Length: 79
Image (cartoon, rainbow, N blue to C red; front, side, top):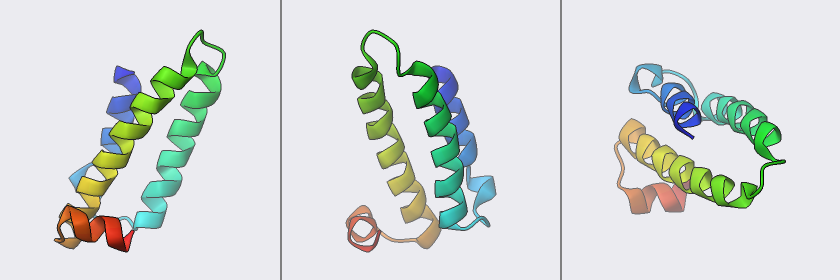
């Protein structure tokens, strides 16, 4: 889990603020998709997938709010 967290944070790092939201989402899909395919045969993948989903969702919401200078409720309505 720690390695995937590191990769997600690197993909959403503030230094990449010039990238479009679409580019970031496509990049995250590649990272997370590969990780999910690798770990889908573990004994309890849903536990790990759920935890990762929660972290990525909120991390992305905070980054969008930071990038567009809007509050989290506005992010939820707009995206």
